[in-house]
Amino acid sequence: MLIRPQLSIIVIFHDMQREAYRTLFSLSSSYQLKANDLNYEVIAIDSNSKKPLSANLISSMGNNYKYYNYKTESISPVDAINYGVDQAKSKNIMIIIDGARILSPGILNYTNNIFKFCKNPFIYTLGLHLGPKIQNHSILEGYNQHEEDQLLNNINWKTNGYKLHKISSLAGSSSNGYFGNLSESNCFILPKSIYKDLGGMNPAFQSAGGGLVNLDFFRKVHSSGKCKPFMLLGEGTFHQIHGGVATNVPPKDHPMEIFQKEYKRIYGTEWEDKDYPVPTYYGKISIDAIKFI
Image (cartoon, rainbow, N blue to C red; front, side, top):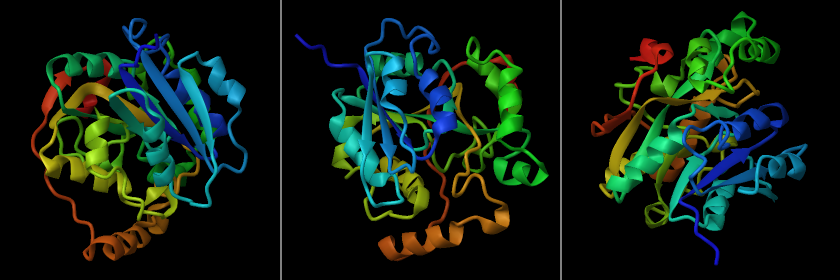
């Protein structure tokens, strides 16, 4: 008799040969705290890469890892995400739209704890960039993949992932830290049924990287009133530099104007940041994460 997993994790990769292993490792039970007894699956989807990830890489991570080479003409990850959700066997799903993000080690344990006392939570995490500044600025000062590799090699992050805070900066959407108002999360969890009820990620978003779709869905969940929001204190995702269309370009080249045009085409108005209900804070702050309070 097959046992349904407690959580299905959908993570999307696009031209991330260098970054994928670290992200996948950070989802493993050897890295995630108290995860050995958790029954979860990782659905790794390569979406239209010029050089797709190796299926052997995915399978080497563990029997709970599944690989899909999603064929599409779209430059957006939206269709791949919705496809991944359709493959999910669990009643609860985690969405990671950008596979270049290393997770902190307490996310799965805290997520499992929250589902024990809340039926319909919307659990989300802080977004951070590896490097001395947000990468849109640090790349102008010489920050690159080689420097990032050295930073990661200089800390024992595979044994203690909270040390990633020491070499990171806040992402723009998380610029006010753990107690600030986020506009999106790059790692969030909710029941699959609610994801479906809300229509999933809107397939109208077909810009590179999905445009504003992640922000749109974050707002959609909050506006629906279907979930109780939880912010994981001390946890986060750490973005590796990989040439991202929005994260790894100089500010003057940021595609926000393109994203706004697409958003207006879909909804008839431009995107504006809004405050969301104060979440329940769950977790604890490590000494290295204190600077982001």
